[in-house]
Image 1 (cartoon, helix red, strand yellow):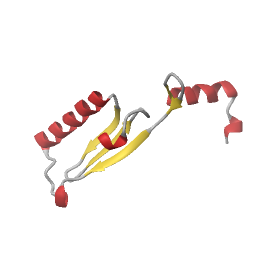
Image 2 (cartoon, rainbow, N blue to C red):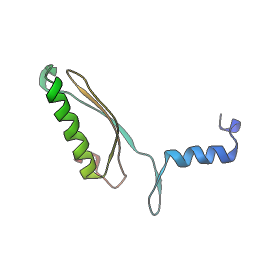
Image 3 (cartoon, rainbow, N blue to C red):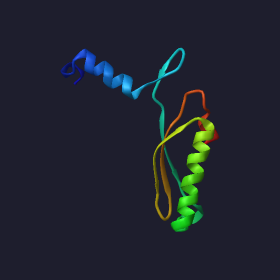
Length: 91
């Protein structure tokens, strides 16, 4: 599959996906699904907005990038790009 790409376009593709630290290249993304107890449908209107806003603020505080965030009535799907130095359990 990789043989179809020219080396310059492949290099550009990889560099667009990867992040750079002083000694490493990285691409760490996590898909997190959060649900309230018993999956009650409580994530409506203002509650959904506040949950989304709080997740984005907390992500910025940790130095993470929220790639995608989808709040449904009974759960929140979250795709987060996390630096390797951040402990995943702190999310």
